[in-house]
Image (cartoon, rainbow, N blue to C red; front, side, top):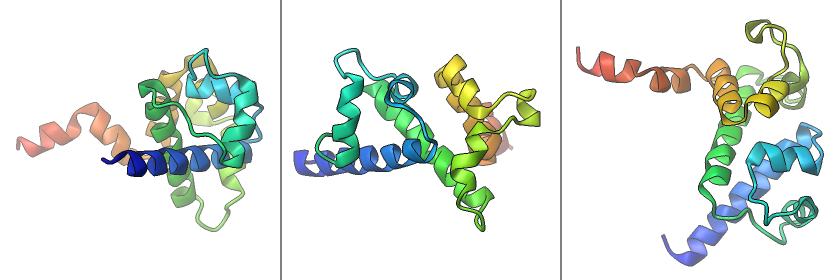
Length: 140
């Protein structure tokens, strides 16, 4: 991928993730934690991310977590197509399948494992891929 295309892809990812995290009404410190930003990225940098003046660092943890977040957003849009407010609301509501915990509390407490658990709950294809079921069913 050319540098220009890679930079544009990072700008698109940054914009989409910031839009989602803003819908979730999270502060910059919480966003920093969820994305596992390197220590060199300060919470004050989030204003530049939000304004499109900077892009997320090209760091594997940040990119992987961004992908999880974007898949969570997509799954919420699919699950609640007639209620776009649920994208911002669902993450803060206690969920029976999580023992009454909120998805955001799981993400904050459990890090990447929490992101995977939330995404697995929302997107059965992700859970299917993670369980190895695809490999088992392909072998039949």
